[in-house]
Structures are given as C-alpha cells and as structure tokens.
Image 1 (cartoon, rainbow, N blue to C red):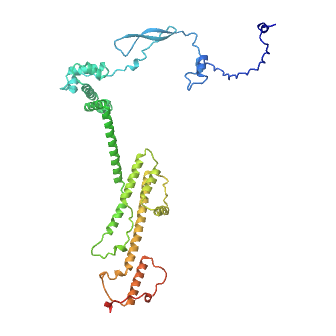
Image 2: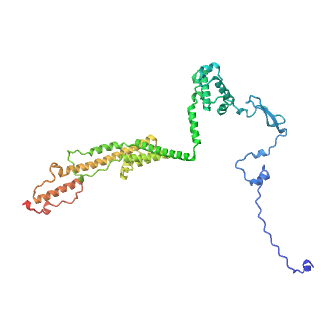
Image 3: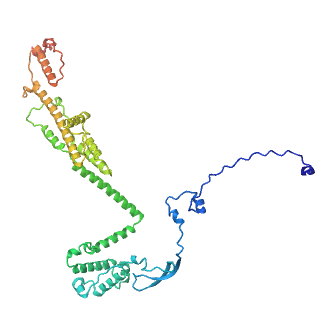
Length: 443
C-alpha cells in the first residue's frame, strides 16, 4: 500500500523519462596573460586599437630596495625675485626629496627691456609730447608686466592709449638700439629695426575689427552679397581681358581680302547674279570668342593637364572649319613630319604647335579663296559681254533670223563652257532652231 491507495487515487504508470538535449557549450576562450578578469570581461577579449602600455610592464614590480612616498614640501621659483615660498606634493624615493630648480621655472621668461641713461635720453629720446618721468614710468611698467600693454595702460598715471604707449616704447627702443650699434648692419635684422611699429595701421585695424564684430546679421548678409557681386565682376573682367589678349593673327589676313572687294566706280563690274560670294577665311571674332571661352573654362579648373588644354584650344581653333579641312590640316602636319600631339608638351611647345595649326588653317582657307577667285576670273574673261563693255544693254539691231538664233545659241554655249557645266553631247546646228516670227516693223 502506498500513498495513492490511502488517498484513493488511480494508479498510473510513471512517464518514461526522455533524454535531455545536451546544451551547446560555448567556445571557451582562454584569458590572456597580464589582463585582469574584470577587464577581460568588459572588453570581451578584443584588443585595443593601440596598446597604451606593454603587457610586460604589467608584470614588473618596483625594486624591493625602493620606498616611494609622497610628501607635502615647500619650493621656490627662480623666475620670481621676491623669494615667495609655496608648497606642493613631491614624489620622494627612499626619504630623499628631489633637488634642483622648480620644473616650471623655465617657462617664466621675462622680457629684456632696454635701459637708457640721461645722456641717451637727451640725445635720442627727447620728445615734446613725452616727459622724462612718463618715459621712465613706461619702461618700468614694461619691465614689470612683460610688455602686457593692456595692464600697462591700466597702471599708467596719465591718460594714454595703448597705441600711444606701444608707439613710444618701440620707437625709443629702436632709437637706442641703432645708436648703440657700432655698425648699422649689425642690427638691421632685428625685428624692431626691420619692422617698425605703425601706429596708424594699428588704429585702423582695431577700428575695422570693432566694426566687423558689431555687425548685425542683416549687415553680414548684405556684405556677403556685395562680395559675391564683386567676384562676378572680377571674373567677367578677367574673361574680357583674356579675350583681348587672345586675338588671332588671322584677322590681319582677312582685312586685305575685304579691301580687295571694294568697288571702284569707274571700273566695269559684272552683274551680281553672276558673282557667287566666296566663304570667309575665318571669323576672327568667333575664333577669339571661342578661345576666350576655352581659356576661361580652363582657368576655372584647379588642376588640368597641358595636353588636355592643347586639345581644347585645337578644337576651339578648328570649330569654324569643316571636317575635310581639319583632315587636310592633319595631313599637312604629317607632310611636315610634325606629330599630331607633341611628345614633350611643354608650354612653349604647345604654344608653337597651336600657332602652326592656325597658320596651316589660314593657308588652306587662302588657297580655297584663291581657287574661287581664279574660277570667277576665268568666267569673266570667257564671257562674250566683256568684248564690248561700253555697249548699252538696250541696243537694237536687225540680224537675219537664222543668224540671230545661231548667235544666241553660241553665246549660251560659251557661257556653259565657262562655268564648266557643258554636257559632252554635240550641239545641234543653228538651222534646227525655229526661226523667229517676223513682225511688221521688220519688213
């Protein structure tokens, strides 16, 4: 009998125990030597970016024969002349306090103020605006307060500004230094002699600084707008100056051509319908504007290669020419045994290369104009109207009907030969044309 029988509970078979799943064990990481367990738990075993101290130093122990203590001991500063005694904590080893001067005494450097005698004052420092008593007090305060002129002006007896005190001290020191030097070049490199104090510049500097510090936000925005506008004006003027400096020599070649086109009233001029205007060699204004824009765009870049600048200038110079003309320029360069791109692109070489390209382009344009002029001249020479230039256009004559038609056809045939558009087919005889109807006036 068990407890369940006493309590009247049904008997059940005990559940079969199931196998427990084993827990995944964490990878055990070995703690490094020289690191405490607390530090290792905080950092997770990750090393610092830069070790603050070598791990070997952590294991070092102080020598057994050294006994280090900290004591509250007095000290004096050699930079002071009143022998003031103060106290501070000092590291004492084996009961022996450190000896020597105060460690911070080397940073207390006093200013060496020039001393002068009564004779030197009367000879070099006499000033109607300053008395000897004021000068003596000024030099004493400069030595006492180490040229801290704000403090000196506060301690000075009379109402003198800081700029007046500075100007008097530096001018007097300079005069004494120059007077005592046996040769002037010995003190020429001194700051007092080389850069004398400018009292007017100092006053203007402080006035401008006070104006800047007392400006409101609205005034600052207005000043920024004025500066931005001034910058734009400066850039536009620089671009105009570059455009004026980069005028091409092609302009001198175009002016005579324009002069040749001038018409003299007494000469015989062909009809405007028979003259075709030749294309200009180059528009100097357009090329100058392109070069100016190219130079302005290059100046805006902080750094650029000289070969890149040469390519941009070549494109600007060849912008008005066609593709066939550009290829002829390159062919001419190859005929002259000149590389299309300089092998050593120095500044002088690039300038000469660009100038050579411009001259070749000008030569090709002049050759093209010459061909056009020769074609026009040949057409004018072969024209039958040039045989009798003084004959009026409304002349009337009565030729034979057959001869009139033939003569008209021959003249048209000659005109076609002059322009080079005559077909190779043989012309029909003059009798094949239909004769003109005779009018009553012809009988």
